[in-house]
Length: 285
Image (cartoon, rainbow, N blue to C red; front, side):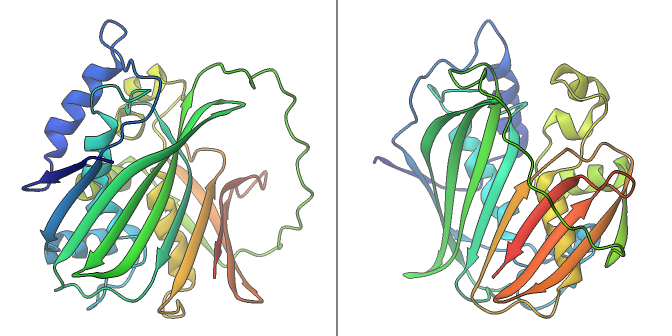
């Protein structure tokens, strides 16, 4: 792999300008394989004001260490920088975050300088389109402290498109949720500003409709962070948080949050309060 060193954190405005351009049919993403580049950013410092805004909009506590999901916002501009690079196999704009796995190796202090590395791997077909993994790693000096694999889906026809849908697994849904969350466009606009994730499917009614959604949808990683409020203060130092995103949360919405103890941690879910289908299912181990 070729290493691409960044001198500063990419501008999300510049990255999204490139992302919108890559989504145009005349230009478009034209590659049929993933770039070999590993994008590196060294010595990144956390902005305490940004962190405070993040914890507030996600309903988490502000403290001396980073919430489990917060480093996603630090790596996101670098991930986008790679996804809008020349030859990437599909446009970043309109892509859907399908799954996410975070491994925290130890708590990360707000004051520590962080080195980030991002690469893409495992381009594959799915019944609903193309999937790709964006792998982000954070270290302090030579010590790895946090790792994430984000799987993004580009909706399109593939050789698997005509396969039958898998039979849904029978689930026992607890009758009483741990809590109920309310999310509206104002909340998601604030999250978009803080996280830098201004994908039109989240912040624009017209943008959402252009990609097949009747209304803007909540960010998957806002949902993943908000779900952790149910177990805050009980997350171990070394933890793996695996999230699968289900039906999008169409704004505005009320969702039920469920948290149940498991043998090695917690099972979490966000569900529609009337029909019970999952917006998010997750394990914390």
